[in-house]
Length: 160
Image 1 (cartoon, rainbow, N blue to C red):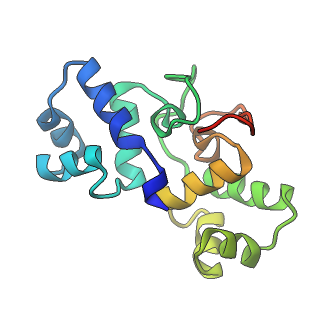
Image 2 (image 1 turned 90 degrees about the horizontal axis):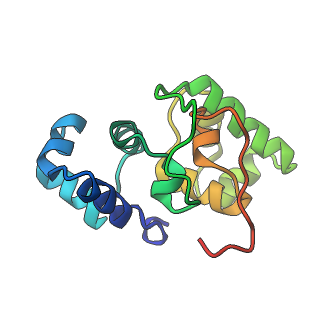
């Protein structure tokens, strides 16, 4: 699932455009330069908490980094993650699509208890699962995570 994401190139583009060294970003994320460099090359999947911090540092949207749209940033973007809002939006997404927890868990190739933990706001959803949800249902990652209030959907016909 991670292989279809192409965030690494976008992260590098954003970082170099801002004339920032990998070391500076790594220090901000509180990780080694080695680990950060593997995020850019996608040899290692970036944890969502690090992607959120990266986006906050550069004031860019997660949707932009993941290639869902060309909105570099959103006005009034909430920099802090609220697991309860995220959980509620995941629940609403599931219900809007008339799915049971077991159905969406199967779609995402995870178990139902794990989905329940995400939906109940007990844990942050994994980036590969978030990415797949956004692609399948053409919905903003920033919205699902509670970073923006306006529900944004994407053109189903656009190649992402």
